[in-house]
Image (cartoon, rainbow, N blue to C red; front, top):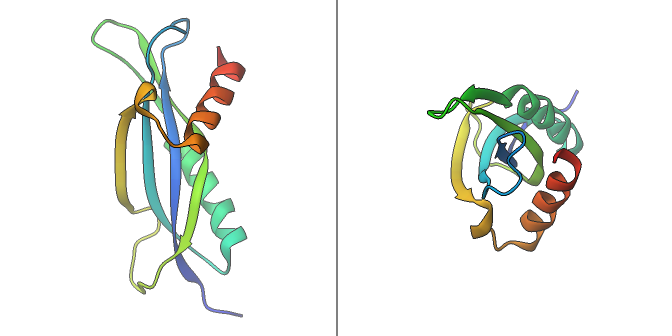
Length: 116
């Protein structure tokens, strides 16, 4: 059996407040690491972890804020040998209106259509 390699996987999350379609949604890019035999298995493992990272909480106005996984943006094989599975190595919070990457904008537009 081949040795497992480490992969960095960039995830896209979006925060939503149900019923508030006009709000500029806060988005997050997060990079986690997974150990897998190949990129396909890394994607499968990362998606499972990302779905478990979804969560919700009431904000200071009593509105329910839901953080939802949108999609995997990128997978890269890493050179490191000793990393804990699920360790986040980079994160960026931004508002939807600040998104300039066409891939992210398209993903968020698709997510808005299916969840509003």
